[in-house]
Length: 215
Image 1: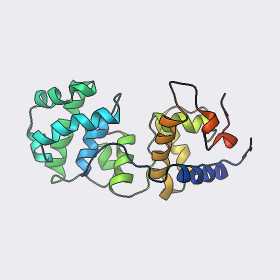
Image 2: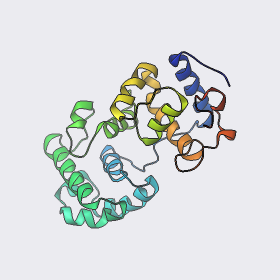
Image 3: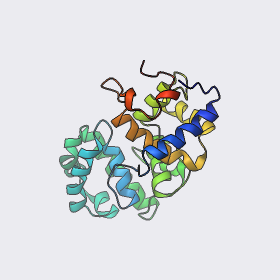
């Protein structure tokens, strides 16, 4: 095992190795417009991206733009998104969010982080995802994979609160690398450094620099 004491050095090594391992990593939610990514990431709470991608096909067929979705009855939205779980709250947030985008932003998703946080149902994770994937701006998306892996690897020390993890990573990850780094952590967390099974350390590209190293 290679011990890397300096976390900045460890971060750069992680970035490089994960880039080689997952060169095409991207957001696994399907979208072709910013508002669709907002809808998708809200539906993805406690639901798989794969299921969300199936469900939104019907949603977008019936409501093809912000105006149509904003005008939709919340009960009708809920009926479509129910397979994603938490249908009532997700439908309510999606409806309110689309209304706000229609009424306050002329139907366009704002490219300002603080403005995104004011949208119903949008937290820091969603706002960062939009900033990075849609607008190409610096972003750190602290989803469950990211939080688990950076703790397990030793990039952060026992921090589980998403915002605190995000703040720590901003100190370590070059801004232009943040979005891609987080996407690659998702791939790695799903395929290798898993949560519900024993991690597959024997095939991990980070095995020799990971603090846990299979523990």
